[in-house]
Length: 77
Image 1 (cartoon, rainbow, N blue to C red):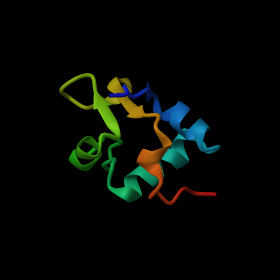
Image 2: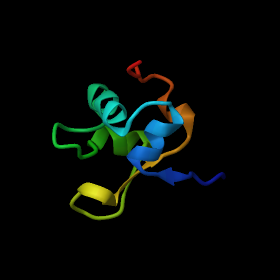
Image 3: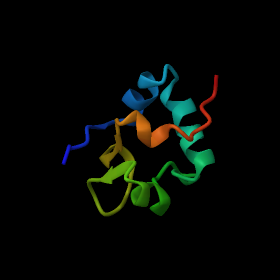
Image 4: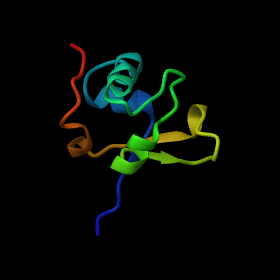
């Protein structure tokens, strides 16, 4: 079984050629981030996010770098 690579929101946005702000908005529209920027249970269930602390805040959040996880997202241009 392959292991996933976990990256910050900034790096995730860079992978798609967009800023972390635009990437965060796309994740929020998908329902994977709440209005406070915290990942949702849906993101956890999809395997798109890894929680490093129980409070789901700030820099403790890492996103799955696998682009297959994001094929259904509508990314801003």
